[in-house]
Length: 176
Image (cartoon, rainbow, N blue to C red; front, side, top):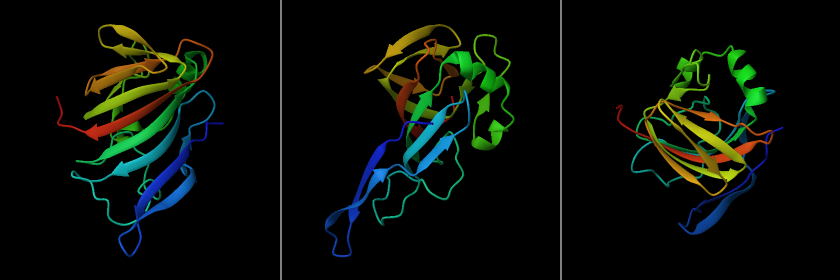
């Protein structure tokens, strides 16, 4: 069961005064099953500059995709299970990730989670630890560490037996 995150969203009432639109568990949670990552979508923008008009929740009713919309952004938390469970889940995956807007390299000998998106990502480790893998090299990230991922081919490897939670802000970017 994925960790539940409280999400508080502000907005405006009909008189233009600031209000709290919602306060509760984030409603858009995608649990892909045993050994797979769990994704909690916290917010999405669909243009730059972003619109603060209206009080609709952009995380509801859409198709769950890894990258943000063109000229948009996504704010999410991903819970990575230990590789001892996740690697098998990645190899057993039957969904077509190209429809999600990215390409995963299951044949990569270093890690089957290698993928690339046309985004700039700000990743903040909330709990646990995880290795960020590039085509060349890797670095261990622990709670409080931040990684700026700039459209590179990368993978996440959790070599512990505890989950690792990472908050991500993904912003659409030009391809490299």
